[in-house]
Image 1 (tube, rainbow, N blue to C red):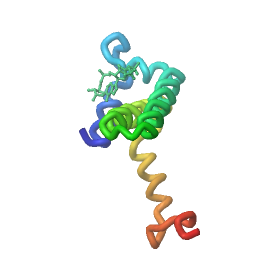
Image 2 (image 1 turned 135 degrees about the horizontal axis):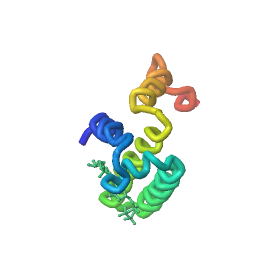
Image 3 (image 1 turned 30 degrees about the vertical axis):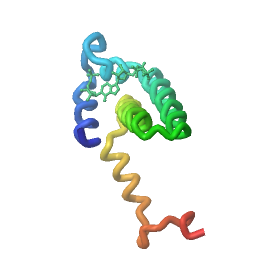
Length: 100
Ligand SMILES: N=c1c2ncn([C@@H]3O[C@H](COP(=O)(O)OP(=O)(O)OP(=O)(O)O)[C@@H](O)[C@H]3O)c2ncn1[C@@H]1O[C@H](COP(=O)(O)O)[C@@H](O)[C@H]1O
């Protein structure tokens, strides 16, 4: 699934039944969504340091899903994030840091 479609699926769960949907449950509890994002990020870091590509891929998917849910719980959309990323694009495509 594309990130765009995942974000749309998550947006469609706003106001959904927490008993029927994990996503709806997290959206109704922003602090829980943030906590889960943190847990998944740590799990991804651990897999990255172990060097297992398959496990890292799985954890990275968890991180992306939970990041989007956490943001959606606060009304931040994928379009908002993309606009922020667009604003960071430099003329050369290289950041100041990369030039140092
Ligand atoms: N991409 C995901 C997705 N990734 C992870 N999860 C859930 O996130 C939860 C993670 O919780 P835990 O870490 O406690 O569980 P776990 O990952 O099994 O445990 P560990 O392996 O990390 O130890 C699990 O219940 C997963 O099912 C997801 N739940 C939903 N989606 C997407 O969201 C859509 C809507 O799903 P509903 O939540 O069912 O509406 C789905 O069709 C999917 O496309």
